[in-house]
Length: 81
Image (cartoon, rainbow, N blue to C red; front, side, top):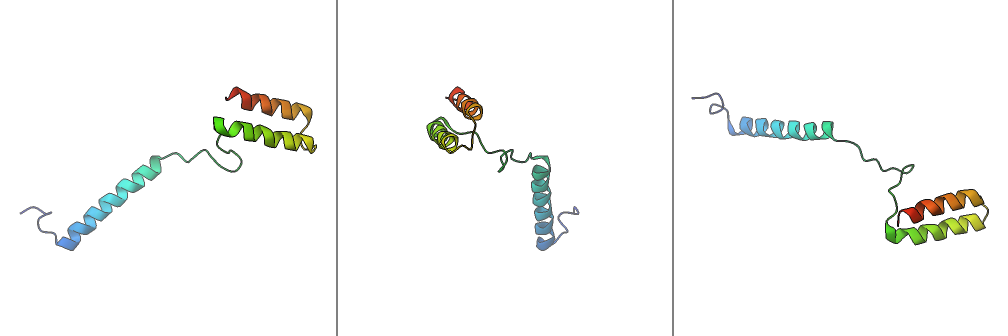
């Protein structure tokens, strides 16, 4: 009789749960964190770009963005289309 066969059902279940937990921890340990955050938002989709340009134009008109800042960001967004 092997050692595994001598274990009770609860002990076998405990070993299985431990192995599963270790597998999950291994995946988590090797995973890379998402690169998206408040300071690094995801890039806009093509459908979002006209709306983004409109928002930039509003900020520019309000004096929040300089002419250079507006032109640079607008060009960046248009390059993504």
